[in-house]
Image (cartoon, rainbow, N blue to C red; front, side, top):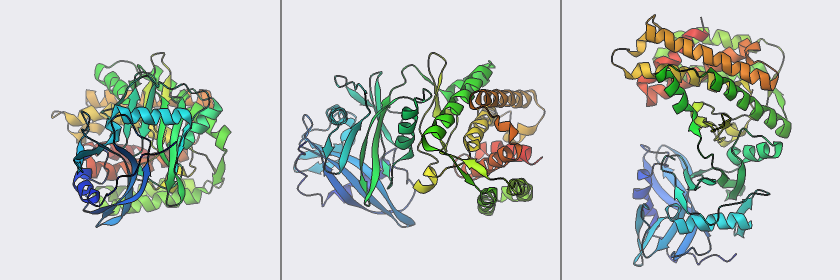
Amino acid sequence: MRPTGASEDLTALPDLLRDWLPGRRWFAEKGRPLTGVAVASRHPLPAAEGVTVLEVLVLAVSFADGPDRHYQLLLARAPHAPAGAAPIGDHDGQVLYDGLHDPAVTALLLRLIAEGATVGDLSFVPEPGAVLPLTETGRVVDAEQSNTSVRWGERSILKVYRRLSPGLNPDLELHRALRAAGSTSVAALQGGIEGVLDGEPATVALLQEFAAGSHDGWERATAAVRDRTDFTGDARALGEALADVHVALRAELGTSETDPRELAAHWTRRCTEVAEQVPVLAPHVPAIRAVYDEVAALGAPVVVQRVHGDLHLGQTLRRPDGRWLVIDFEGEPAASPEERRAPDSAVRDVVGMLFSFDYAAFHHLLTRSDTPGAGLGSDTTEARLAHDWSAANRDAFCAGYAARAGEDPRAHAALLRAYELDKAVYQVLYETRSRPTWLPIPLTAIARGTA
């Protein structure tokens, strides 16, 4: 596969990108003092229709308050930018723009995956038996933020990772393992694009089945709360879907063990650090640490495996036939690549979903002037209904999980309680920084977990 010629001169590009990057929705460093942008690597691609030059660039973005981050840009140069593509600037009388907004460019990417092409350090890898929609037109999905997704009708969606890290992205790694295990609780993997960063393999993009007609789990759950309709059937099916994922990951990638004292020490460090930043947590620290100490005293090792790592209702889709899919296996956004790939107890994912039921039940009370956040623990009718809704769906979820996994997470009470408190501590910091009006939800969970 012969690439296009690289653009002759990129000396002006870093200055253009320094102004352009902060305005992108997928640029995750908004608010940080950006000091510079450098082109760390360039990967010319074959010509796409109407495009003069096409390259995959890895950008090293520098900041005054921390280490560089690497971002990916599919840089296209053409006489005119297509509709919807925000121009980066001009070069030799032509326009530089983000090629993912050009259907001709995304058609090329899909074709390269279908062909299993190799272009320089980039490998376009189709999954065996995948049939790709080469005759359809790819369109950028507007809702995407931290990455950019391109959808081809009702059949395929390509997730292009904007911020890159060395090592195989767990999203692609775990989808491959789940496909090998035959799991039907994830959208079918169709292919990927892989490259190199700092001398290590790096994941550029993931292509998978588009779950046509599916409903977002968060939207479906909050609608049930709003309309006071039953959600326990969905909650039970969600538990079964997560258990299916966990069973499949164990089968393909195995398990190991960890010392419960190490888990407790990790949670304690996090709790101490957050309490120093969020004084409202400080009065709860002794009771939280007492729960962590219960886990440290368990004696027996804790079984760990590969997990989702950032599970909540927004990471699920309900198919029209009632089956649920688990999506987005990238892991916790604030975690390092090593932390995202590290094995953990399956309880971590269970707790992520249980916590999400709390959020679905209570968040609407925080947006109404007649029900202030302090009332989450009150005895008002609205608060009681929210508590009852969350409790019923937590139980249904755990019952569904137990039916598929053969083990009820509620049987490990100390571990479940400790993981839920650690999640609440994390959310206290997140809500304080991002959504202060939602802070009562994790604080209420802490009060419940230490009672």
